[in-house]
Amino acid sequence: MLLNVQGHDAYCYTGGKTFNPGLPTVVFIHGAQHDHSVWILQTRYFAHHGFNVLAVDLPGHGRSKGAPLGSVETMADWLLALLDTAKVPNAALVGHSMGSLIALETAFRAPDRVGKLALVGTAYPMKVSDALLDASMNNEQMAIDMVNIWSHTSIAHKPSSPGPGFYVMNGNQRLMQRISQLNPAKVFHTDFSACNAYANGEAAAKSVACPTLLLLGKRDMMTPPKATAALSKAISGCRVQHIDNCGHALMAEQPDAVLDSLFGFIAG
Image (cartoon, rainbow, N blue to C red):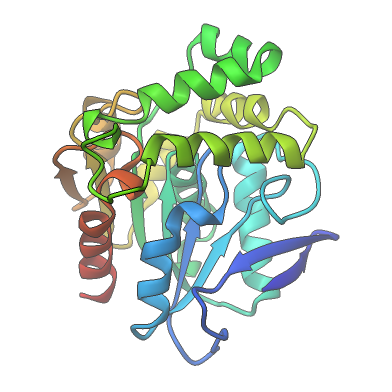
């Protein structure tokens, strides 16, 4: 589905179903140098089990036009504008990594618009090392390689991949390379800089009033579980769940476990 948001086409994957205003809506928000496709399994299941799905491509990513946005705050404003255009008064938000910060900031800016909040592979502060910031600006392929290695555990490597003939790490690498090919702007650097600079996380977390799930990979090296301490303390009554045998790429390494957790939380 294409929507015109802030003067540019914005693409939303609807899980293979036509958007139905009468159904509850779940919005899925991808992380840095990604697009809606990281949520394929989860979004299709939700769409075929009683929910509207809007899996967005952020500006400058995937099929959405416009320049990549330079801060978490402007991305949250864009997401609210998208909900306005889609005529969605209230939604559950599911965000991965950078997307989790966008979801959190959106809930801070418009608490009446967010019914539930699921923060996947999250952390606050979400600091990015100087070496990775530099690589994302000056040697994008090196940055892709670094993130790809750090985002996966040994279960993703051949021959232990749970899906025969499917190479998890290569799929993630090709997606990040494709984002670079589609947009000559420094998307990776823009995304990482936005994560690194975001400073409103604690205030936003303290303001959250809706049910919230923190879904974390036990072996995550990009956003290690211990880095969620500030969020879990600040969000009143939040549920924290850890998934075994996966790192930062939770949806690829443990897709069924992620789906079960998200659907149980949002539909329950």
